[in-house]
Length: 337
Image (spheres, rainbow, N blue to C red):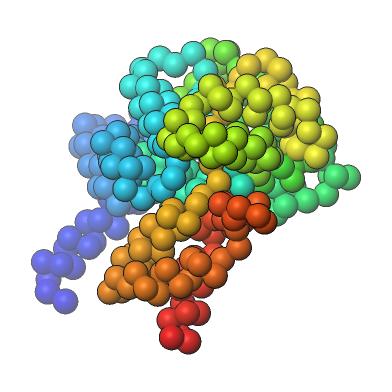
């Protein structure tokens, strides 16, 4: 190692120590402008390497999100349009009245988790690896009905603590259809129209709920359009949103059962993910091959997709598992080709 590198490395170490040493109260005690300047320099270098809640690490890319939704999400024209407008409008608003709350609904493998990842990718420099991106999975984090009161308390503390750390935090609640009924109401105050709660503002945060519930309603509408000879792109949000919200609200097996989040209209958009068809699975397969750096092989992808399961039994229009198992099936078929 050259001496110059040693000096730079040593300066970074000293600067990082200075950041921790010179907290606001401490800085006022230390005499002289030199110490304050050193602390400022140390903080600047520290923030260069370590994620902080500022525009260097949080910088929403509306164009990037639009491109990703159009090029990487297949068969979900309603989702692409609604999510882009909702996120872009919220991020442009310098003084939102409440946090943004989205509820994504649809069957397995239709893209709900994928869309939340795309949002994070275009919001945080570190994407889903950001310390400001938080994901809760019902069966992993809240498995026991007997512990629901503890879960409520923990959830409130987790959200308050993380938003205190960074107001522009993002929270994903996966498997809402498996969440203990009543649990999600514990965070209702944080999603409401309050300027501050105990000195903390929650208005810049994003909450996204993912659920398979309501999928039957979505399939029914999609099937009706197909039987009527209409193109699936003719389906609009208004054809589904009201029925979707009522369906999950009245479902006793859903974490949204009789929740105040719906009753008080705190969910900004119920976003329906349509069941995927053969052509969409082919797009998923080709995209997966490209992502793995493989030479495009339409014949292989076609074989994989044709061997997947579809419904209804008579028409076989929609995929049972969507794109969820495409990657593993491609690996299997390649090995046995």
